[in-house]
Length: 137
Length: 137
DNA sequence: CACTTATATAAGCGTTGACTTTTATAAGCG
DNA sequence: CGCTTATAAAAGTCAACGCTTATATAAGTG
Image (cartoon, rainbow over all chains, first blue to last red; front, top):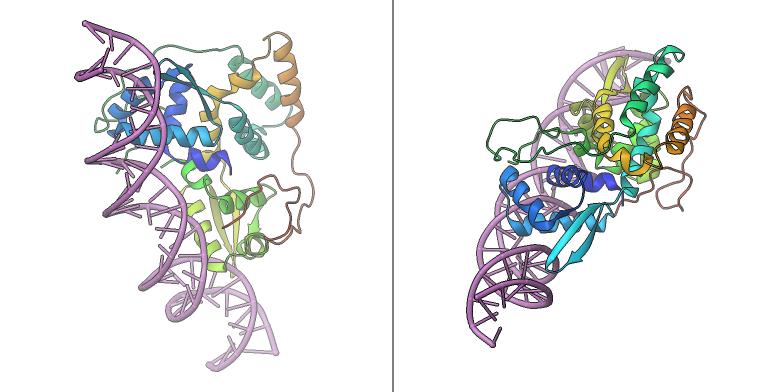
């Protein structure tokens, strides 16, 4: 059971993107996803369950709310799997290249959180700046 | 159409792993996958088609053989998508952590190719050292 | 307490997807 | 050339998946 299996779905990827900004209640996630993909609450609840089952997200009850959070371990595995392919794009001349690549990586460290991206267009609207642009049939 | 959709299948992931060592003929891939997963030649050919369609692999004809190779672009996209989660495991104290993380990354650069891993056990055999351990139902 | 809000589960259904077997294409080769 | 080898395409099957509607659970609230 590999995290890749769960990441095959655009809704689940989007949920993880949202969670990457920090904990979110099921309700908050639901309204965003509903707006973007036009699917029902139970559908989203099922996606959340899959994310839980694959260990990609964890839940914490707080009253009647469920607070979801990213669980990094399986994503790290994905990252590790990609390892073997990094050479395909990080291998520029190996001397200069190492420096360039390091510079880029250096920059991405320490860059924690970012800023509201909220309010995405409804699922029929034209693609906005979202990273993961996909449509449901 | 995201590369993640194609990477959801263990056979396709395994094919890419094999290709990460360099170009391979369809036949070579087929015999390994057949041994490991016990599926037919056409099944594998179909997986290769999917990999082509998603731009994850390219083909080159040489006589009657087809030489497949990894096409990195979509994998780089996957890598980019993971970007936002790296903080979840690279963020240790930010001072010491940066050094540690850099050290690790440093090491992985320059490490091109490796050595024969060939001869994997048949699909019923116990798990060997393969990275991507999964079984077909 | 009845009533609403927040979320999950259950059951059913259509579509997609990963196989299979069969067949086509086309390059080597005696 | 006929025959084999290497690979892809075609057509059919069956299970898994993502969705829907309906319903359960359980915490807040007047």
